[in-house]
Amino acid sequence: MASTQYEEDAAGQTCDGSDAITEALRERTHELLRKLDEGDISAAHSLIRDLNTARDETLYLEVGRLTRGLHNAIRDFHLDIGLNGHSKVHNEISEIQDAASRLNYVINLTEDAANTTMDMVEAGGPIVQALAEEASNLKEDWAAFRGQGQPVSGQEGLYARVDALLERTVHDASSLHHRLNEILVAQGYQDLSGQVIKRVIALVNDVEQSLVRLVKLASNVEAVVGVGAPRRDNAGLAVGEPEDDSALRAEGPQMKNSKNNIISGQDDVDDLLSSLGF
Amino acid sequence: MNKNMKILIVDDFSTMRRIIKNLLRDLGFTNTSEADDGNSALPMLQHGDYDFLVTDWNMPGMTGIDLLRACRADDRLKSLPVLMVTAEAKRDQIIAAAQAGVNGYVVKPFTAAALQEKIEKIFERIEAHS
Image (cartoon, rainbow over all chains, first blue to last red; front, side, top):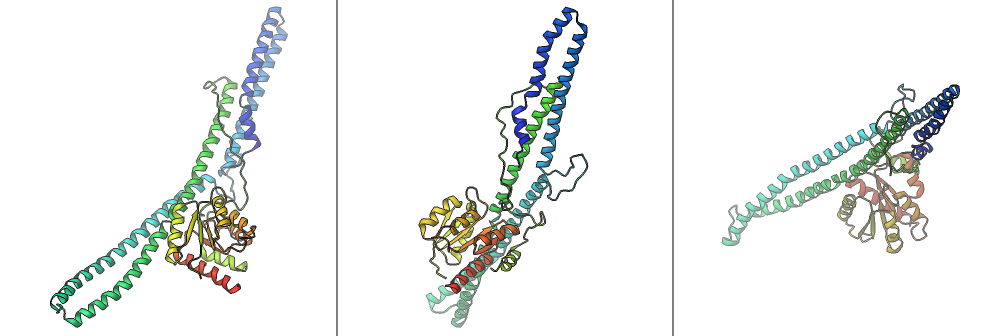
């Protein structure tokens, strides 16, 4: 989130408006009383006018700050509202919308990973079961052969079954191995969804800070007008560090079609690299 | 391809390091070490005699692209083969990685086959040039 000069001003000057008006009130009240005592009604009227002007000017200043604060918040989060209230189409989608689509991406990603894992387990289970059954049947035959020299299925039958089981073991082990690898790779969702969630957490924090700043600005207006909650000291409100916004800044996983200039998969990466002579 | 070559895997997510480590072991490469960002990886590379670097891009501290640039700027590491395995998928980023001298680029989420293919390609090319 880009921090602006204005935000720094707002953080440093939040008290000025209402403090100035209070100071003006205090100074001129004594003078007003004195003029009234002296019977100088015209000078007293002039002082009251001055007070009103000072109050109005402070009010305009604070309303101006609040308005700029609102504009800023809208611009910072790329909300799809024009600054004059009409809808304006931005090149970039709003960060809030972007966050929502990122979170949807996390849902899809975790769902895909869970489904892949369960598919592989479901497919692997029967393979293991069939191997275990066949081995267990053969074991009885083998025990009979070892004990009496004569297997139940005949000697030739036993050899054929051992051959078949060995062949099947080699084949099924390789197929199980492939499925275990698929399960392993599917766990990559943790990294990708973690990157996305970290970004959304940062956005939520930014939104919170902006809202707190807006509330502070609004409370200045209230203080000048003389209505609303008593002023509180807002200490410890950090203003975001200006961020390097280069095109190469790491952004985490990309949602398909979310922004221009995004490569859609490994094939496109390979095409781009081979066009660069790789 | 020398199956005993020393490989450094750099990613801030331990899950991803574990996935890559297991996939590499499956391909026969067992001599692997891990680091969680460029700052911890660079000294390991400078003193560890590594043959191959597999790195993520988006990491706190030193990013993968900065690690790659630091390697290319270091006489001892300028020809170290580097494979980037990352979710970063903007054209500009891939071009920047290519210009910085990356040897291969795999986008997450990836398949075991894609990782294997890129690694084989990197070493085929190196062997063809040596």
